[in-house]
Structures are given as structure tokens and as C-alpha cells.
Image (cartoon, rainbow, N blue to C red):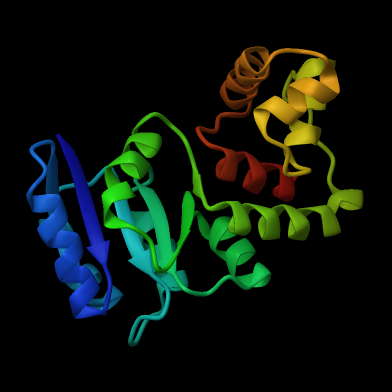
Length: 209
């Protein structure tokens, strides 16, 4: 059973979320709220979800602040931003605060189960345009970024460096003359050594070193 939390102030979109998820046999809604304040008031009463979809443009406490609160309360939950804001600085700030994904509105609810499955398997939800903006922001700081001593091999560091350029596994494989499967294997080792689960967590750790 996949448990989902929703914080969205658009009643129509929230209802669509609820209706869609309630028709799926393997999903359960832990909570569906219109503000971070509602979450904070009742957080102890909710079942810990696998993923929380959180809007940014919320009344009162912002969605960005909400990411921080959710992450403090549930360390392992996946927080996915849902918003129409594709500003580089906002995307970057959300990832730094602990977001595991960033979905731009509008999106198809029919794709939601596939997105959740990506999360379930340890992946990160970043639409191509969001990923491009995020990597661009990271590259601006790349001269100051060094991968710390986590026991990474030379090849693992090379894979990470290419990943931070915004390359896909296939593109990284072409550059390093290895298969995309080998790239994936290297990244699994990197994640394990650095104590992270997803690409967004890897980015946050590297940016803080």
C-alpha cells in the first residue's frame, strides 16, 4: 500500500488528486489539506506517508517553509513540490530545503502512479525543464564544488561530475565509454557511500561540502 499526503490550496486540484488516488487499489491518502498550518496542527494524527505532494503558493506559511517542517517531522518521507513556478532560484531553494522532486503544473493525473512508482524505487521527480534549470544553477557554483572524501573511486567521481552537468545515464556512459547499466551501478555505490537515496539528496550533500 502506498500512502500519500497532499497540501494544496486549490480545491479543484485537491479534489482531483483525492478522486484519482481513491480509485487506485494500492494507494491510501494519509491527509489532504489546504495549508501547512493544518498539517502542523494535526501532524501527530496522520499516518506517515511515502510521499507528500506540496504546493508552493499556499496561504500563510509558504510551501517552501512547509518542506522544512515536513522534513523535520518525517525524515524519510519524499517531498514533491507541485507548482507553476519554474524560477531557478526557487527550484534550487526547494531542493536545498529537502524536496525530492519538483513537478510543474499543469500535469496529467494519469501519470501520477508512474511518478509515485519512481519515488518508491528511490528515484527523483524532476521534469526535464526543471532539471535543466537546477543543473544550470549548480554549474554556476561548480568552481566552488568539490566532492568530499567519501571513499569514492576515480570512476565514481567522474560519474558524479558528469551527472552534475545534467547528463542522462546514457550520455554519461557515452562520455566515459561505459554502459548506462554500469553508470547506474556506480551511482548506487555513490549513494551508499555518501548516505543518500536520490539525485536531489546527492546534490544537496555535494553543495554543502
